[in-house]
Image (cartoon, helix red, strand yellow):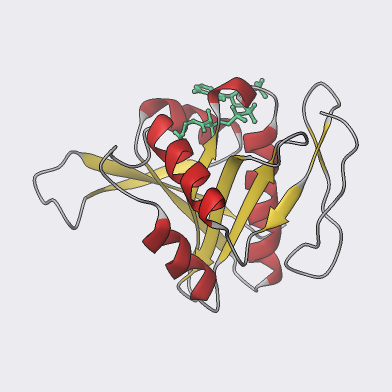
Length: 176
Ligand SMILES: CC(C)(COP(=O)(O)OP(=O)(O)OC[C@H]1O[C@@H](n2cnc3c(N)ncnc32)[C@H](O)[C@@H]1OP(=O)(O)O)[C@@H](O)C(=O)NCCC(=O)NCCS
């Protein structure tokens, strides 16, 4: 990817990230998604298994954007500006949380997921949080977060579906 044009970060600074092969990517805090953005995010979340194919991402996007403590960070393809990576951060005043970390299959393994997690840690540390948590829905994601220093701390059953399989919670201290 070429010609990175860093977008304003949640803190009024410029954000720029590098893939593992040195190519630049643009990260953007999405505050006013277009219908095309919502459609692209819905496709991404379905393709990466984060939501069922019958669901629309619109409500979760709106909830995150309208929350005082929520950030939706996206990466766009440089050519057609299509969103190919997402991550939400938020906090409940005690713990910071990462949600909806998703990288399109064609861009996985280039370091973008790690970059987004590092950004979430910075955002939440600057919000005064001392611990970040994530709910893990598949074993591969657990391996990914373990590589980034996250520890398994427990399991929860989905609130909406008490009979659903247990999800793992992983944590990492934000205190340096
Ligand atoms: C999991 C995911 C976010 C990782 O993003 P990514 O950009 O591909 O990961 P990175 O390139 O930053 O990889 C960072 C490290 O994690 C490892 N890793 C990445 N995906 C992995 C996987 N599925 N299993 C095991 N290790 C993995 C990489 O090998 C790399 O290790 P290294 O530094 O030793 O080479 C991405 O694969 C994805 O979107 N998956 C589908 C959606 C999902 O499961 N999201 C998490 C919800 S909790």
